[in-house]
Amino acid sequence: MTAPAPAPKAFVVGHPIAHSRSPLIHGHWLSAHGLAGSYERLDVAPEAFADFLSGFPASGFVGGNVTIPHKEAAFRLVATMTPRAERIGAVNTLSLDAAGRLHGDNTDAPGFLAHLDATLGADWPETTGIGAGRTALLLGAGGAARAIAVGLLERGLPHIRIANRTAARAEALRGLDSARVEAVAWDHVPGLLGEAGLLVNTTSLGMAGAEALDLDLAGLPDGAAVADIVYVPLETPLLAAARARSLRTVDGLGMLLHQAVPGFARWFGVTPQVTPDLRALVVADI
Ligand code: ATR
Image (cartoon, rainbow, N blue to C red; front, side, top):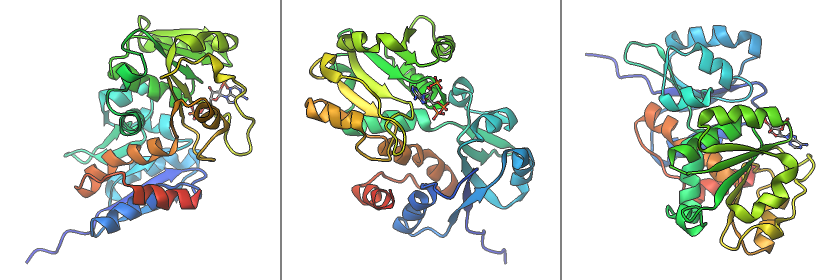
């Protein structure tokens, strides 16, 4: 008689990791689907991360999420990765391939798009006016901006503008697709709002404890949508200002929830849903 297969175990690794909501999300899905499995947080310092990854294939874990500050190191250290992770230059989801080698993916881009579709409807490129020539305007040029820009390019958006306090980082993102990505000066943002169908804040401005993004949204066209990746607080000053102007808003929590779906499906064999129950559970923890 063969022994029953052990229950799959997955992790989230970061440093620090105490505030990660990923265990709450995956724990909810494990119990909602009645699955025997576990998901735990692992605090691994940057200097120990390479050793952690080399020990992972023999550790009994089937996979895991990678968060700050390890996403770029994971990108450098996996054996194989998806084309999307390659393009983004960061890995946030790990699994083992058939040969037991480390495989990396980046689910931030599809997570952002899935949340846009769920909130605005999949026809948002039309309803925001992007199909008729409006742009997507991204504020910030860090790792999150890069993932979101890759997602928007994959969705076929013809023109993405990126503005960043440090201009060189926005310029660097033009390398994703210089025909469709334009770097614009941070100071020019107010004057460019009139041409934007989608405004996305990918900076940390507006986060609890940080300064707010100082931007008057009066220039955005009616029908434009405003998205924020900040989710603490859930309604950032930017989203509140958009709502006050009767513009549609997309909060940052949905991206966090949707980016978790592909990893769970891969490790535990069931594709989970982002339900109101799950949202409520995480909101209560914010
Ligand atoms: P992440 O991986 O979450 O995107 P990051 O790479 O540290 O994090 O990027 C943070 C982003 O917020 C950057 O675009 C940063 O601008 P700089 O490149 O100029 O640093 C932006 N940001 C942070 N604080 C800011 C502030 N006070 N004003 C404007 N932009 C700010």
